[in-house]
Image 1 (tube, helix red, strand yellow):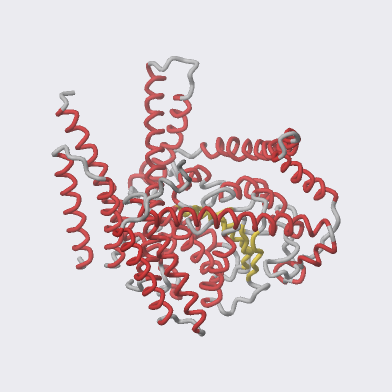
Image 2 (cartoon, one colour; image 1 turned 45 degrees about the vertical axis):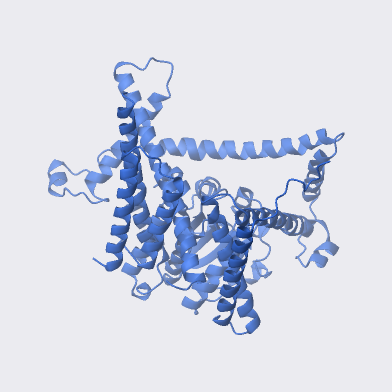
Length: 278
Length: 303
């Protein structure tokens, strides 16, 4: 009969050698960082050296996935998931139960957790009860009751967001579209005599506003399906899809910039904090 | 032209040419070569300290001018709503905002709606605020409200009353004992909100739940990924916006250009723009090569 470990292969000699080399390299790095540390005490230097070396090891372990899946990546990944789960669990207790509930629920508990007691409020007990009811999902026979607090959460969030989004993302956005098509217009003579391609110049600002107004109108036409997209309407619709594509392209460009920034950040950490060669 | 720039250009040119030749010949290029190439480009640019000048665009200049034009002693709230993953992009913005607001002698209210923002906020206070502004007094010039769970719910509450959500500051001191809170009861008493972030809750939530409702001007500093979603709020709902490393670099250049005391300050965003620009050139080259290879393959297949 096959056991759970029956298919597990023992690591080859090459893997063992790699593991030893990596361990030795990072041990040397730790010793080096600890001996060149700037902190006041030896203990702090040893601790900081370990933290920086371990962070560098984890960074390189995650990067190693770009080559292929490997044990270093798996270790870093599992460590991240485990630490995150524990972190958020503790944070939930200290920030929600101790931070929000206890100061309104009990003087004794407030003293115990060293948080200032505020005032009793029945509302917090209701919220606490809803929290407990949410956990009923774990019980097969009483799972249905968890739908009640969930309904309150969804209803409240929807209510908040409906009014806010209606005001901010609809009404105000429509207002934002009404841009002056000729910015700071003082006649054609003034316009041509001060013609400039500066980003805050009259020409560029006016052109930008034209793009906003025409872009919004054509984008709306593209999503208007009650009339066949032919003639002028079709041309506006085609321009609308071009505007949308350019928008998606700009978004993607920004995403690339963001990802490269993260790469620069990590390499800066490796070169500066770890290797000190910058 | 520096040796570093020439070396980088030769390296990039050689690599791009090799990939172009492989693509034109119809051979597959392993994606790991692409990763290695991008990584090496960034590493070279960092090692050779390659930098390019930045000039503030109107949207960044608007953010700068907003802080510049506030009267001395104005109340400014800075929200550190980000995590370590976003730190390379938005951390330099936080440093700049702290420097600029304190140089203008504004009163700073620091807070975060992200649990992970607490430690980063403390880092900024310890590494920038305290060493560069030793005269700034806690409770009189700046206050650290720390992290509060609740997302946009927190903004909703503090819009009407700070004390309902924050009976104490991050150190456990009662707000009523801090001089800065003598005249500040709610967000409506704040002259400017600076939201730094890139997720939820973030700049958008500050606009939705504080800016629009309380008619409070908001400046945003955000990770590049979400910046395009926030541009529509400019200029009425957001008075200025810093998008990604580029936005941070522009702000740094504006700050160093306008204040003598900041001429020699550390400019991480400007430093990052060199590798960033080189990497963008490589990505653009790859897009062009990819298209050339695509059209050649279509031609070979007789389409």
